Each structure stands twice: as structure tokens, then as C-alpha cells.
Length: 100
Image 1: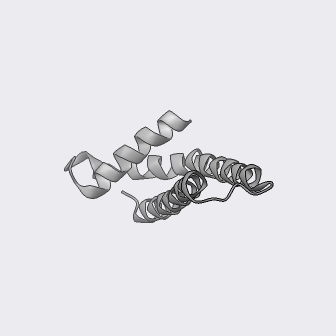
Image 2 (image 1 turned 90 degrees about the vertical axis):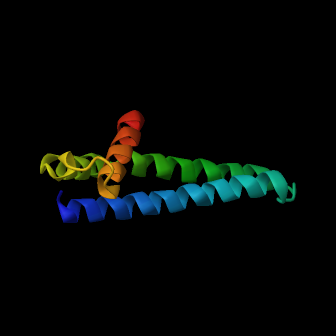
């Protein structure tokens, strides 16, 4: 597998996961602690909407497909199906295909 493509893919996925966890925290805070002051709920909804849009853009970024293709095309994944890199690429491919 192309080391550069795999490294870029993993960095992209890690950042996207960070954004997802941030959205989850904002959502949890909205439900549990956020005061219901004037405009606060509407503002939080706009924050979550924007973050969701950005996450979707990252998830469906054509670069992800290119990195996956590069990782899968060189034959390094045809060996051990339980290799962590092979599992990562397979699961990311599944998520990418569903999202696109």
C-alpha cells in the first residue's frame, strides 16, 4: 500500500473523527447543560448544522476515494485480512462508499 496515501488517509480520518466528537459534545451540552436563553438554542442548532455539513464534506471528499484506491491497488492489502492497516482501509472504504 502506498505509505503516503495511507498516511494522508489516516490523518484525514482522524481529523474527521475529532470533528464528529466535537459535534457529539455540542449536542450533549445542548441537551444537558445549555441554558435556554434568548437565541441560544437557535445558535447551537446553526453550529451543529455547520459542523455536520463540514463533516459530510470531509467524509465524501474525492481525495478519500483516491487515497483508498491507492491503498488498495498496490496489492499490499491482499495478504493478512486482519492486519490493522487492511482493516482500516476496508472499514473506511465501506463508510466512504455508503456516504457517497
